[in-house]
Image (cartoon, rainbow over all chains, first blue to last red; front, top):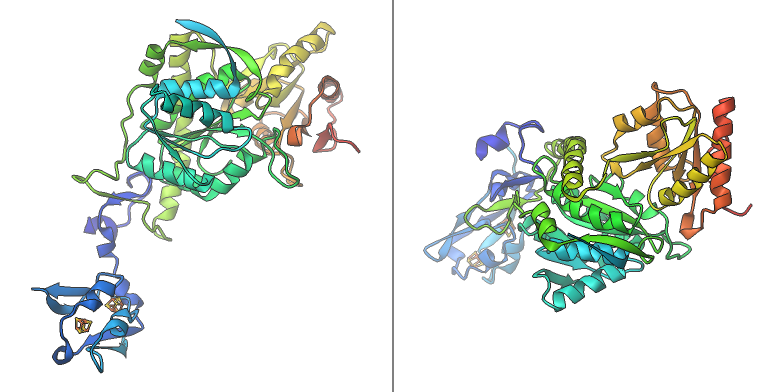
Length: 100
Length: 392
Ligand code: SF4
Ligand code: SF4
């Protein structure tokens, strides 16, 4: 699947009608669109996981029912997680993205 | 094996749908299509088909439901007219781009404004370039048989494109005619089982249907549609031949009438070609060497067949029941004259006729015959397009 998407095929080789294997959006790194980046402050986090519920891009990764990390390959930096975070002073802050 | 029934064109379509027994029909009523789905819902209600009938709230939803159902792997049909087709428009393109073999009878009707419920071909010409195959019917018999063949054409592995079956609103759709109906079994055998290329609901092999396709892939996918359209012409010929053999018919992508020794020819689509048979016969009795060419398959455009049918003629008139409003003539004219470029230098005359159901009278047709024969003698054309049957 990965190599299919990396080496663009010609029209004679592609499956007809834009039918692809499932889940190919994983290959598309929407994280490159980010202007602001969410940063997690571990010591303030109460692991309520409201950020995980609200994230429209499945970019809050959870491990053992606790906040684990952001998936920066796909996080578009919308800021909803920081907005919803109920902790006083916020356990997620948005910082300006620094592009390498 | 044949039974003659008195049916309207719409009833003939519903009867074909009953014998096809599609998995899903999603449709919305619109004049003059309504009686197709009305009759078909009787078949559903009476248990004569096992179709899942989805009564949606608009044609946009009808075609959307068809796209979903066809992508899920169900044999899917709908039917519409005019404004209904206009409302479907964006989803019509999606059906073609996703290569979904949906079959849709279109009962041709003018587009508003001013509001009008009668026949012209403006509705289907609006989806001319969508990637749908477009078949045109001359009478109720052809609506029945083209609907049956359309399923096979759409679902053929080399094609996988949606198909519209066009019948002239009220003229064919509501006129009662003797229609020869075949027994269920031979029709069902001819249609066969649907073997879907895609099934979006197969959990064992999940697929993404219709992903975002930007500068990197969109062009390739539309190129495939063009290729499938080109390949579909031979497929249609094969399916016509199979149908003709099984049911004793003479379906062809184009049909010439008295062209062998003709000086001039009239080219057109739909029910008008039936009227022409009589009037060409009359003209022949008066020694006028005229014939006609009926285009049954408008897309794919059978250009080689058309050129070989027309190339020896001295003048050609093309009838368009839709106006392209100050383009180089109507849609059929543009195609025909382009196809003849380099193959014939005969004058090609364009007549725009019958908009909003305006009758094309015997006098109109006789004038077309005389003008075309005059062009054959003089080599001079008439200013185009010539609007015929409109009050000055
Ligand atoms: S910024 Fe938006 S996309 Fe990124 S993790 Fe937070 S909610 Fe998800
Ligand atoms: S919303 Fe805030 S407190 Fe809750 S899990 Fe996410 S970061 Fe932690």
